Every structure is written in structure tokens, then in C-alpha cells.
Image 1 (tube, rainbow, N blue to C red):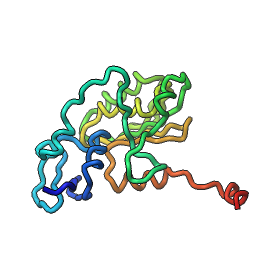
Image 2: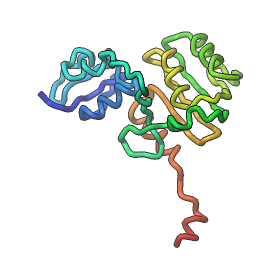
Image 3: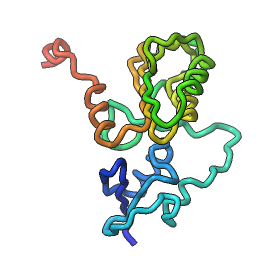
Length: 197
């Protein structure tokens, strides 16, 4: 059996991806039990939960009482590998209020559940039909994790932390992820480059 997989999203195939990448996608919520996959070299798509190797990714994890594993996100500052995104866990309780812009495209679920969750996170105001401003002391990764629970498999979410110049997103395809990362990357300051040269 091949140790790489192709993922089919909206009729387009992406990959092949190695097991470590598939584990990352599952941890992010981008690979779900019902996601269509095929092992490299196979033509037949099947649910990820039906693949013997990938099925283990969807079993409930054993609770870790001392410290939960941090949620993983795509980042604009890194390469194709998955990295921590948002404030680190040590900053989570710093009491500093951040300002967030939250944008959703709801296609499979009602917007009311998501909006209710946003208002539970701190003072918020809707600014467009599916966009909100939020002030919260929670880190971006905790906000994303909370809101993802209210999304369906066709819904997308983008969160920008205006206070810390960070972003997190959910359920965009691999190509869109790459484009967002390229746009969000910090470009070198031309003045700093002149001073260094």
C-alpha cells in the first residue's frame, strides 16, 4: 500500500500528501472522516474514515489533564508545514484585549449559531451580513477553535487579529491557503534593507 494520499475537494484532486501532512490536516479540521481520499496510485475515492491508516486520525484522543495540545493553524510566516498560529499559550492569560475581524461564508449551516458564539466571546458588532468586529482577551487559536464547532463542511472562516497582526482561517482549499499565506507574509522593510546593506 502507498503511504501517500490524494484529497478530492469539490471535484478537484490535491496531493499527494504524506501521512504527517494528513495528520496535520486532521488536527486542523481540514481532513474530516467524510473527506474523500485515495491512496497514491488508486483511482477509487473513499471516505478518509474507511482508510485503515487514516481512520486512526479520527478516534477520540485520550484526555491530557495537565496541558491540552495547542491547536494548529496555517501561518503566513512559514512553509508548507503546519505551525502554531496566533498568540502562544503563555500569552493566552495575559489579559490583553485584542481586536478581531471575523468573516464567514456560511453555506451549510445557519449563521445564527456562529453569531451567537461570537457574541459569547466578548463585545462584538456585526458590520456586514457575515462579518463581525470582536474585542476579546482570548487568543486567536481559542477563538478559531470555538467558532469552527459552529461550521459545516462547506462553510469557511477567516479571522484577523488587528492587534497582533495575525490571522487564522478554516476550510479554504490548499491553493487558497497558499495564496492567503503569501499575501499575509511580512515583506522586508526597504529602509531596514538599506541600513543592513
